[in-house]
Length: 140
Image (cartoon, rainbow, N blue to C red; front, side, top):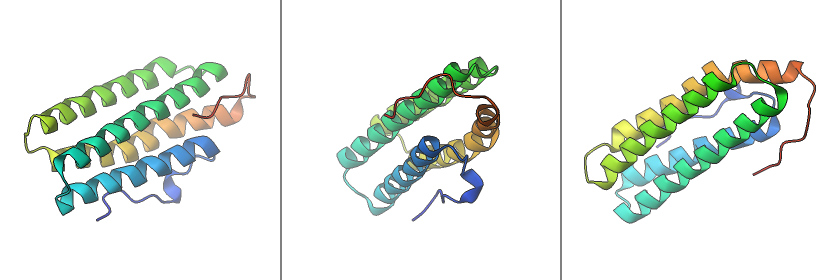
């Protein structure tokens, strides 16, 4: 079952960011399938932890671009990253405690991807494309 479908609407034109976004969509769909199919709890927990770790790495990539290019809304965008990570970890904790949050968690993560890309990443990329690079960002 696919809960989050990648499509051209989410393309930013920044290769590394688009590749990471596609990987996040794929990881979310794998996690959703694990929930749906009743995969062992330990397997689901490992997939969830991997997804959240990769999301944090992706946020670091975005923030490096923003810092290096002097993005004026860096603080707001980074604060949104913190808020999203905290909410995701809260839901992860509830899941690990055995609370029935699988559906809430997958919907939150799917909405997070789509909404964050639409609202925050699109604005960031518009700025990045109009500014010359200062230094090259390392790939994770």
